[in-house]
Length: 98
Image (cartoon, rainbow, N blue to C red; front, top):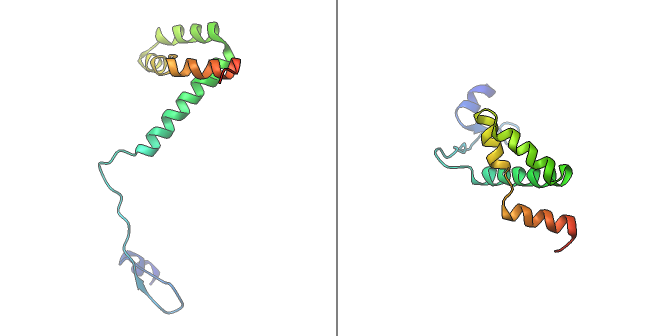
């Protein structure tokens, strides 16, 4: 009884009553912008904290080792390369300049 009601897009709100509700359909073909931005923020934060933990020379050595590896390691090395914004944030955290 309950399975048939669920398959017909109906639900039970109170004892003995059946309400018809529509199921939300997921939009297909849309890029999940929020998830992509959160992933980029996580990678960006990881890069900064790893640089602060290892130091500049050790971080550079790790990036050189990654850039000489297989294709996945080269992709990781390009994603983890220091950019001007990352350097600005690292200097701000390290020296308290902002």
